[in-house]
Length: 117
Image (cartoon, rainbow, N blue to C red; front, side, top):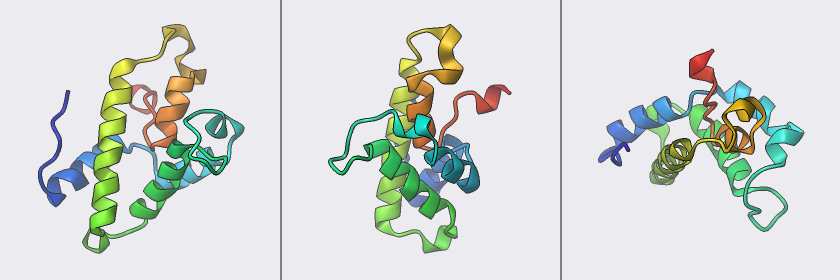
């Protein structure tokens, strides 16, 4: 398992590796029923991952120099989630494309099938 990045340059590079969806791909994905069908409710009817995806879009639209400490904290959170959830894998390998596992990762900006296409 990857170790936590130690400084802002590391977390930026790690975030860019973890988030393999573009801002526009993520925006389009978050509008789908599949995106809305997974994740832990944040208390307002949307999942924590869905809120994270919206925050990731905001970060992707920023220049590196404009990132705030809150942005960097969220980038660490994204790295932790993507690392942990990727290691768990889907329950049924044949169903990866339509799995809740993949949908959850995609809400966090990571499509596990994108590197394999």
